[in-house]
Structures are given as structure tokens and as C-alpha cells.
Figure: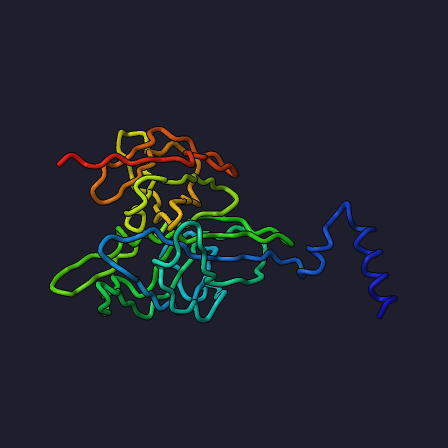
Length: 270
């Protein structure tokens, strides 16, 4: 056994200029890790999604047939999306796949429930599958991390008396291509549990598009994570207080934008 280990290490050193040891041990495959996170929703306590199989495809056709999909997880599990704020993630699947360019991720949905004021209601989901179109490259011996950023605030709709519909608004990002913004609200402490922060993206046509959000934790801290590089207005809101806007903030790949550790909100005029 020792002799085999020595021979393997020797081979890795010999081939160091050509291929890494990780690549040799991975069988020439790349690892894909897919996780999910969420932005908070208004007037909804919990949003549970029962995910079925999780698949990826190399096809550029959004109507790709079943034979063009590769399953990375047979059961994505039942997840409370509203528990995933401030950068928290839940794994949807990890798999070793053939290197190459992939263009789609598919999340099959088996059911959904929402909890409002302590009462649970079955929610109707517009589609039995969520297809996320975005090209990403898997390289042999390297782990590629993707995050499906679910926007509950723009996905969950009240359509009647205690009747809820979910039209999933989900953005797929590659972790190593994103940046983040952080800050801490010190006043008012009494409403931090209802305060939130979100980013609006400048699309270049004077239209600001909501692009991620988070709740502020009990210490006042917040993290707006997994933002694509670009220019954003970052907004902090709390009931009974004026919205505080940090305009024209630049998010840079791989960097953290610090908005301050002493942010104060102004009470709304009565």
C-alpha cells in the first residue's frame, strides 16, 4: 500500500506541468456545487418549497428534451427559503460532471406552502420546474459554485382570501464572479427585526431593478451577497422610518463594499 501511494505521488510530481493531482484523482471531471439563498418577503413568515430532482444541461435550447439533462440530485429537499438570508446557503446538489460548457439548471418543484401569521397555506406554483438559463464552464479538477438567488418578495403573491401563488423569480450566479455589500444599523434598535436591505441595479436606462435583498439580524448587521459587478442603489428600510438610500454604489467582483457600522435611520414625518 505504501509503495502504491509513493508511486502515485511520484506520478503527480512528474506530471505537475501537465495536469494537477486533483484532476488525476477526480477522473478528469469537474465538480459542480449548487446552492440556494433568498431575499425576505413582506407579510409572509415562511416560504417552503419541496424541490424534486435537480438537473443541468449543456443545451442552449430552453426546451431541451429529457435526454439532454444530467441529474445532479434526485431529491433537492424541502427548504424554508426565508431562513436563507444574510448570505446563508442551502445545498441543492453536488456532482462530478464531464468538463465543458453548461447552459441551464433545472429545479423540479413538487409543492409549496407559505406561513402567514402562524397559519400554513398551500401555495400554487406556476410551473412544476424552474429553468435557469446561464452559461458556466466546468473545468477538470475544479469545483464550480453556483447560487440560485430566490426573490420571495417578488415571487409570492396573494391572489385571493388566503390563496397564494408563487411565480418564481430566481437569479443564477457563479460565486467567484460576484461581490457583496455589508453594514450595521445602530438606530433604531427596536425595529431591527422588521428592517431590510436590498439592492437595485442600474440597467443603464434609468430603470432601477430590484436585485437581491436581506433581512437585518438582531445585532443590526446585514450582508447583501452574490451581487453581480455593477452599479447599485442600496436601500435600507424599516417600518416607521425614512428609507435610507446609498446611491450609485459599485460592486466589484471578489470584493466587499462596506457601508458603515453606525448606520442610523430617520423617523418618518407624521
